[in-house]
Amino acid sequence: MAAAELIQVTYREIAESFGIGIEGARIKAKRRAAKGEWRLIPGNHPQDIVRVEMPAEELRAGPIKPQRSPPNNPADRDPTPPPQHETQRKDTNDLEALVAVVSQLTLQSQAMTDRLIEAERMRAEAQRDTAIAQTELKAIEERLAALQEQHLTELLGLRERMAAETEQTGKTVEDANARERELQARLDEAKGSLAAMHARSWWRRLVG
Image 1 (cartoon, rainbow, N blue to C red):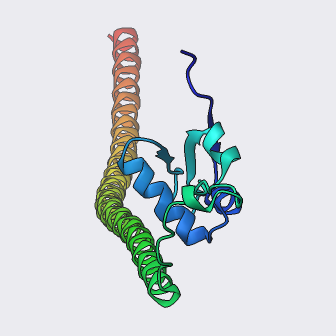
Image 2: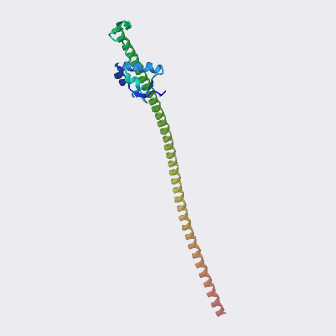
Image 3: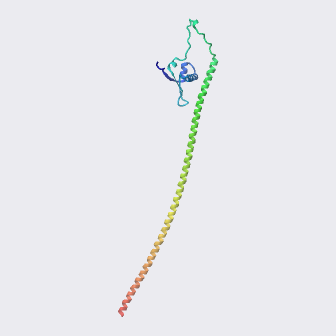
């Protein structure tokens, strides 16, 4: 036996085929899906259109109409059941449609609540990460300021030591030059005395 051909349709297409409203088509689809005869295919988001998978033959056949005996055989006619009260039928359909609408709105509200909760969680995480980053940045700035102050202090100390050493070096050179001049003067004096002594001894040798 060949498998029945399945098609995917919308509530509007079902309503048009069976001659009912869209809410009635939605209720009908849910009932048939609960029995396992049809299958509801929801979208990825609550706003997406829900599609219904059903046999193509049922959609083409439309509503099942009761068979009637030919007019020329009144004896074979089944007794006609009393018609359902139109107001009662309308109230039932309206109540079922209202329940379906409330159920759909509840699902949409829950989805929106979940999205809001997720957005709030992400915002809280972003604020926490921002606070951590600001704390770390402040600590880095404080360390840089401390290092800068330390380096400046060391540089000033180095300059002071270099100035002191330069001053000390200049004083040492000046003292060395003075010492050298003093020694040169003494050497010149000693040379003069020695020359005088030699000259006097030569004269005395001549006299004697």
